[in-house]
Amino acid sequence: MTIETTKECVRGCSMYRRHLDECEGGNCRGCLPRRAEHGHLCWPCHRRFELMLTDAPTVSRWLTGNMRVGEGAARAKEDHEQRRGTGEPPAPLKLEVTDLRDLLGDQLAAWVDDLCEHVRLSGPGRHSVETDSRYLLTWLSTVERLDWVGDWWTELAETMSQAHALAPWRPEMKRCKGIPCPQCEETNLVIFGGEEDVTCLSCRMIIPPGRYGIWVLALGQENAEAREETA
Ligand SMILES: [Zn+2]
Ligand SMILES: [Zn+2]
Ligand SMILES: [Zn+2]
Image (tube, rainbow, N blue to C red; front, top):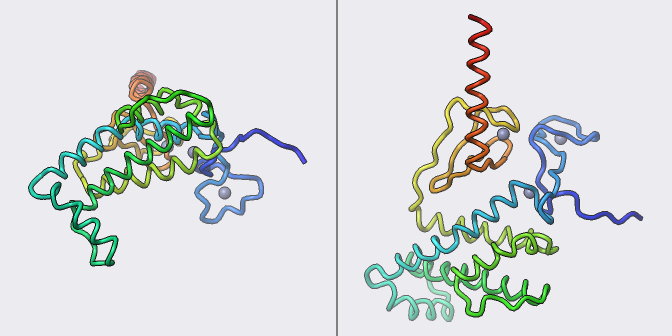
């Protein structure tokens, strides 16, 4: 038996339109595993993880702000406790907001403790979404080498997606019209609201703003040259 280091993204990502030899084709969108380049994560998963952690304090602040609107904050706890005890109908929105805010804080705090225990770090001292997310970002390359980083990724993505559903404060997604993806060449690039990175909806590649700028410049150059040749 050969023991290999993890070469494939632990989240089971595969590459768009690239296939394993044994692939039968059909409706397969791509089955060749994407390589892990950052610990156990591939580049797009690494970047998404980094963006989610960067976003976490903003999300938490927004949830906190929304909770204080009107009567939510004072009554939230009573209702919340009742709900646990009696299995009453689903709680109103404000309670979901409180729960989610707490969940995000608890998740990040637990991960920081977990990380510190496993690699003997002293931790940030006090827990808060702000300090914990910054701490995890500082130690990101270490975090990404933990065997269970895929689980953390999934949990955080779930929390963030719930937050976005409850709090659709994000500006709209913008399409990058007429610009083909540098990876798969399909014209399906978008910028999600509030982000600077460009994401390809076809192959899921994430392109940081600097690289995207260079890509657009290069395309412009190519087009100019093509025009000159045909002129
Ligand atoms: Zn395939
Ligand atoms: Zn991945
Ligand atoms: Zn693409």
